[in-house]
Length: 350
Image (cartoon, rainbow, N blue to C red; front, side, top):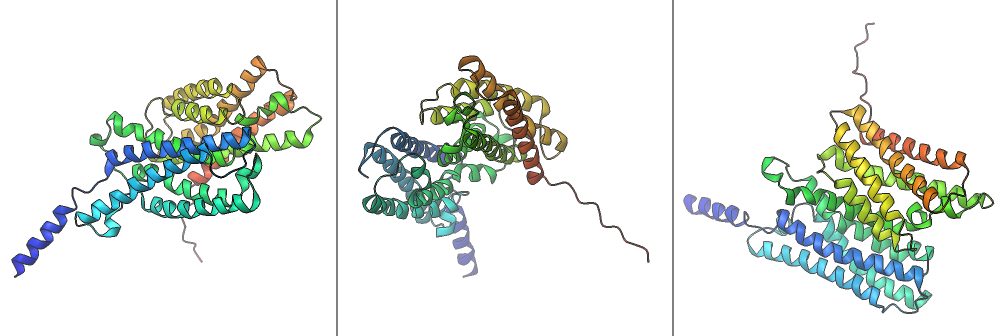
């Protein structure tokens, strides 16, 4: 009887060794999430360019079909893993637990969004970013899109996992996560407004908001980059890939295609700086320097390219100051990611 019970345990454990997950599943999810991301950006583009009067649009078709593919892939994987003998908790691929919650929330948000549009009409421009149902969709989207990033975070990066296919999931998962933030905050993004070339001194309030946008986007970007850098050694070309593809998506929002070469140039420089500094938790000074350098590089290139191609209407004080403040913001974020060590407690003599 004892032997029989032990054998049952062995069968159960061995049956869970072939569960669906790992790098192969990550790439399937990345493909499905790319479909969803494309639909999201297409829908945002349509909100910015057309006077939409219906929930049932081609853009929503791409968005929700992408979500359907993501949901089917994730749910089918869980069901198949459960059928192989795993518990429902074990059946969820590692790193995708919150993605399940995101799928459920997104489905609810999609139905709520349809009724919201019926009751209050179709949003345009900034209304589309702050609509309550859209905010629910974006929060859930973030939970879903972070799945590959969380999976990579929990995976050991030993020699066997250092092939190019595994390494490439690092920048791609970072890109998916960044793209969610970029989409929901596009109205406060310097890549969609080109404010230094379009907002003059007479528009002081708009200039102030544009500077805040530079600082805010610097903080969002550097938080995600530092999160990745402190966990992994990023492969060559990671930052060029992430920044360029993110800029491509943003450029369609308001036809600001000049940001694509800006992001590509800045990405190449950042990759070179990363190679030489090699920031990590063991090289804290280099980590902090890298945190300050990333936004400095991006916005130095940004202002220079705009100056050469379109002309700058901002004063030199405002332009240079905005670049410096972006670097300060990045440097300060490094202290959130790696706080200074507290001095060791010392016994006091009475």
